[in-house]
Image (cartoon, rainbow, N blue to C red):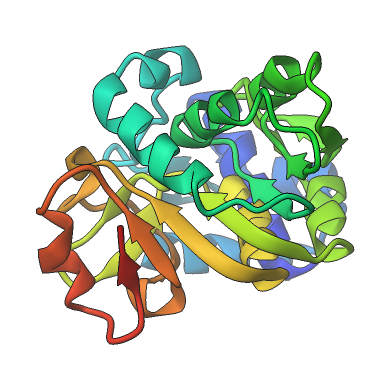
Length: 250
């Protein structure tokens, strides 16, 4: 297991424990040496995610909790529908597309139900259920269900699915786009899977309603300069799009 994967597993264990976890527990669970675990905890502490204590670590109080999928689907509904309609217009017959676990991607899937000559690859089980009665070729990423985001498949199997498929377009959303153009999220496990999507997609489209602009989340996904198209519902996006010379705004 690579150190970044171990860091993600450590965060999952700490969140599940809801308190102190010892170095020995982490060593036994992750089959890693004590020196490796201590290095991982030091790196997580430097990111402001955990606080080391004698023999173990606890989560920092400022860790950003993930909002449930059902709640997110009811937030900024009109904006997400407008964004989804704009995004659907980019999709051509025959395209292979990646859809992430976001609620905005779910709204985009709703715009595709009557399409047929498409392949959709996703780690969002709600999207799979939504499109199950369509004529779209649907590929599940596999993986295991996130403890915090129960619509989302994560882990090595999910990551490898996206690493082994090349897509025409990846549609994704995140927690925030910050004042300096950083695209950030609050789940390290989801960031890793989404990175695999972005790396293997010819075009990267960020779906971002205006409520996400100007915030801050602990994990870096990418920068706006890494994105091909930014889709939002109002003119506020123009300010943030200015951080990139290449991003196209819709």
